[in-house]
Length: 188
Image (cartoon, rainbow, N blue to C red):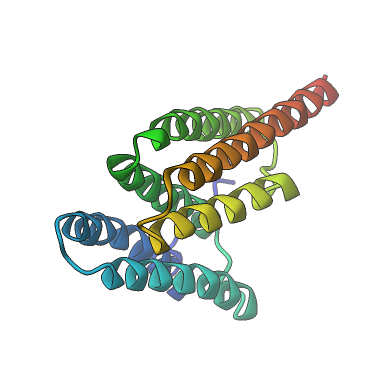
């Protein structure tokens, strides 16, 4: 039997919050652009805090009120990835050193998307993020927020933070590679 998404699922409060987070991405990019050209930085922080608060609440509400949906399970990580990608992209405009981070982020997330599709095609259940994926996401947010919160950081600090974030992403990519290797090897 095919699992069809109902209108109630599309318009559940947690899923509406996920759509809202996606809608905040162009708002973030706009206020970041304005800040780079002399505008205030506080709108950047406001948008990020609002996005983070919404991210926190959508999961809590979904679990507490039994509103967890397959759509929400896909929407939440997509909103996370798009938000992080937008922040990395915006910081690359300000700091050239962030450009390699964009490439690594695209490779990591592209790999994860492909492996997710392979798992679905093979009829496998997709698990939530592993501990190293959660650490990477948290670490990336902290580092990116530090770069945003302190726009006049000395260059060596920026390089150090970006290098640490790249090492964290690379570690996570390798760990997921081994995870998927064992997963598919165990399938045979």
